[in-house]
Length: 391
Image 1: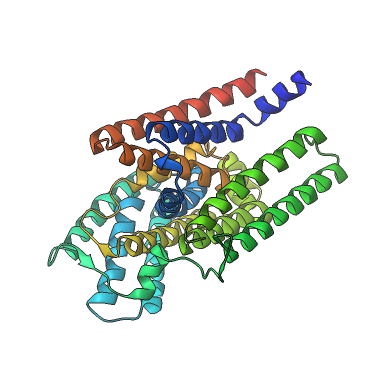
Image 2: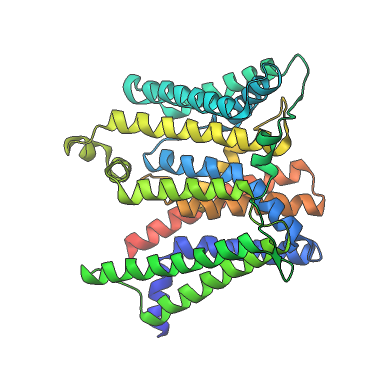
């Protein structure tokens, strides 16, 4: 029994490692803040804080899988958020058309980045570093007339601050949140059982029944705890809904589509992928378009949450997104990564920021700790890869 448990842990050490890290962070900050960290109000706040980082980390996962990097996402999200604010505030464009324009602008930027990287052959580090510097300047230019641009559009501001309708309360808990939580748990159990049965049908290795059952019980309990905490407060936020949709769409893209298989194939061996008939140029362009559209969405979420756009918008987001992707299981060598893992990685980084804010730690200490976490994530990746090779 212990040998099987040890083998299972070593095989899935990346997945288990990030959950262990998240659990340690929650326990540590709960103790250091006297329980404030896990209060219903702060958990709702943490989810909304995680939203834009999780969206960026989802896109960054695809970029890292194909062995590239995007350093521009921080200031680009701040700049595109400022564009949305200008369109809504200065030109009185309704929120939905403004959002569509900003998303289209993100797609255009992604097309340019992808062309420069894939067709011209400029390293993505150089292209996106130039973009980072340029969009920082454009953000300062866009906000120079009045500094912070306040957004008063109710619909737009609800995206980052609002909650889905509650449909009443039962014992002080929002009905909609309880229903969605129950449906979510049932769907999780159904798809896990379906995936396990499919693997068994094709003679793939599966975990022992006892471990599989323990996994279902543990994750269902975690979902239940989260749902109850949210239901005590205002329920499920629109930010959480958007993040869930993004994670679902891009997990499906990576795991169930030809494009997803091509992305993993390019990350594993670009030359072999090209020889097998995969267009590395097209796939790389697609990935950068997806990345910058998600960057635009992150900018919208951030501007909506802040109800404003400022010259400092997006500062440091690229660090959080990259760290989230690596903590979530992406490999520095490419070819490995899951969008769901990057969601957990983003939650780890957001939890660190949230907990340190509650403790009153200064920005200087926060940046040092975040940088250390990023280095440790890469070291962990290298060590686990060596361990697998040696075994």
